[in-house]
Length: 101
Picture 1: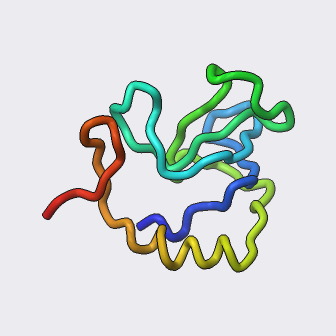
Picture 2: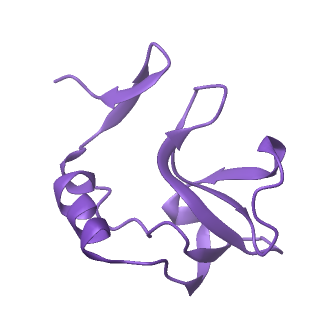
């Protein structure tokens, strides 16, 4: 489900977007803790300039990929051992947790 997410550092343009975003995090929620997002990113090339400049989005919102972030054995291992095993997630008590079956 999550093993095909882009690596940190990838640069993308969202559908209807005018500015590129650089991915800085994966599988997280906004401060309201209401929804789980695939990614969080910051405006490229400006980077982190404050919390208000972080954008949460899902994989299906990406229109174009300009750069795929760094991938080494750590990233590949993380994909195989963590991302591929996550399954369905939910928010419980302010934390992202696996859905109980």
